[in-house]
Figure 1 (cartoon, rainbow, N blue to C red):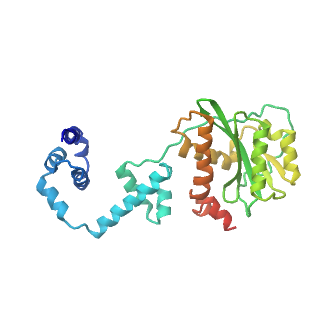
Figure 2: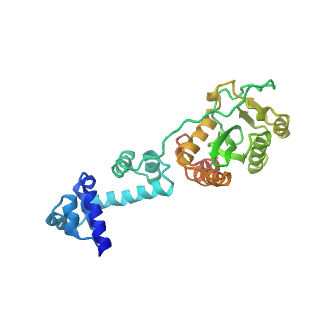
Figure 3: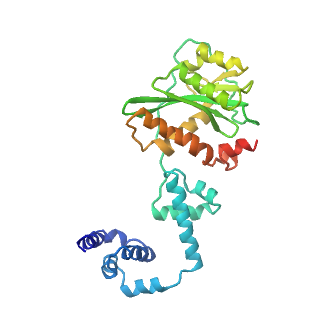
Amino acid sequence: MPRLAGRERDIKKGGSLLREKPKVERYRFIKAASEKGLRIARLCEALGVTKSAYYAWDKRPEGKRAKRRRDLTELVREEFFSNHRIPGARKIAKRLNVGRTLVGKIMQENGWIPKVVKKYKATTNSNHNLPVAENLLDRDFTAERPNQKWVSDITYIPTDEGWLYLAGILDLHGREPVGWAMGERMTKELVISALKQAKARRNNPKGVLAHSDRGRQYFSHDYQSELRKDGFVSAMSRKGNCWDNAPMESFWGKLKQEWLNDKRFRTREDAKQAVFWYIEVYYKNYRLHESNGYATPSEYGSAA
């Protein structure tokens, strides 16, 4: 009993905030709290409603419209929180095949706010005298078939142990991550590992246009040799122009704004596990893309 009394006092102290909610929401709170043993009279007093009004609401049969709204709210809640507060109203509405405005209202009413964007510094070091490949992609980010155009880049993730560097490759057909690798240093071996993984996953395609920025790693003899093995054509962004590699920059932005921004990693291994979940589980198989006609990268690629 003392514990229940303490909880009732806490609700009474915080009642001013709850009293700002619509009456129906307060009634629902009272009902939920009463089922846990709290007294209805005290709850009604704390939330500024009368017992008679609460009991009248509680005995009233739920209308079909109200039930549909309640059921949809639960579906939106499940979509939002099971995906770590990543998707916004538009993506959830597409997934549930309902109106975006209605989903937006439900999220606003419940204070369910998707993660926000932060800016990150570029990792490219283009201050070198190595030979430069032409910008053959020329910002044409369309691809008619898989393995026609790949884009690649390196980003970094802070951990308590130091930076974790991540090299990635996207197929512009469907925006699917086809290869990636992580390590403690931003080396040519890192980008070569990502390239080899991409080749293996795509059954060693031939003649892919492989675009990157002007980082030293992509100019290295070993990386260029790996490209030439399968007749890949090397292409590079113009100096200091991130828009020439916009899809890759966009992918890094999504990884960070949707998933990594609010996390602190004790070890590089912890960060690796988080990156794996986002790329291999969520991004490829669940995240809807407007450019894919709201299909996931995996769905879009399998339909090609």
